[in-house]
Length: 259
Image 1 (cartoon, rainbow, N blue to C red):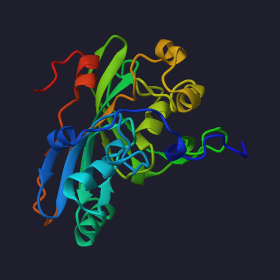
Image 2 (image 1 turned 180 degrees about the vertical axis):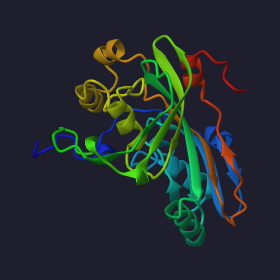
Image 3 (image 1 turned 90 degrees about the vertical axis):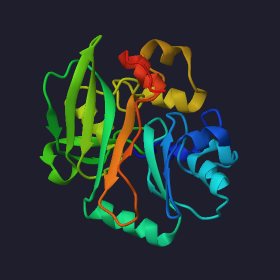
């Protein structure tokens, strides 16, 4: 389709609560004079918003640090929770970026997938923009082309109610990589609006927010994806970072949330 009707997700204004400064402080996983790492909630956009500092993770971080300039070096989609890393200066940002490019950064996620995944799967199908979609930012996996630089490893941990809790490890960092590869595998994320069976759910959510149709169609209010581990070989005194499964996903999989 030549004229996608959703040009940019940052232009879509979906009502979401703001993050209070006290809540942001509680989310801090690590901080030194060069780096700040936080556990992002699954309803907060990373990029700055015109609605004030509490309406985005970058805004909340700048407010907390009282800084005009901050480098977002490890970001997540709006509905993905977990570890996000900021660099406080350009040199630290460059060090982390070089680590990413040299594949010295290791990340793993928890994901809840539709269906029962019996054994580990590795998906390495090439990811390209989906030019057939009405959503400009949507990507798709090519069924016959491989790209070993963007492998996604899905490791099932347990199944429940026709769903599978997986540990997911990525090689590379293509946009929406886990979500696209999960859909390609035939096991889309629980709560997925864009890479599920019906992308009109995403369009409706963008226009109208949470509706009765979404309530009936989706068993979870967001994509069930959480970045739980992040580490890098570095000289920034940055330790391996761990973010426990958040309360909403813990409840989904029947685990007791971490205190």
